[in-house]
Length: 192
Image 1: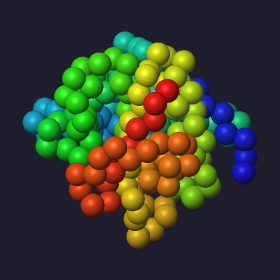
Image 2: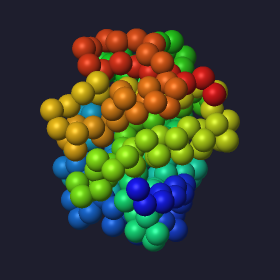
Image 3: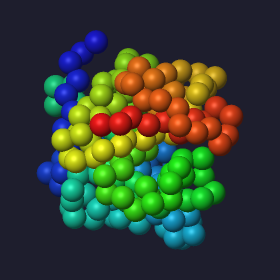
């Protein structure tokens, strides 16, 4: 495997983020806003609105995740940060909702909520490396808990449905299941 390096997504890396997500903003114009914006608001936004929202979020700091590079080419993204910034991830209607509602307001409880790689870069083990880097980033940023809500399995290993990550990579990184509100979607946690 090529050597993958991960860097925090800061404003000076916006062009790389845009290049990685492509003209359509990754998954159907999401621009990685799915968990960041309440559904009622997100439904009124087009892809350009979402792109602008994410660019403003990155400019405001702190970094909302990490970009992975092979040499100078952006190949991977992982969204990682406080649960507090992810209202849809904390919603009582979701499988990712916190065990304790106060965790959704606690800046030291973080979430790994999204991964993205272009189809040609999937299946190369980059998710494992990006999750490892996300763990390190969370730890050095003061998180005490890091959670994920991956998918247990998909029909294809390169499925776009893996944007939440696979259970296998979370297990390999030392996460443990703490709840399962829907078959195939465990809530997992790593104590940092």
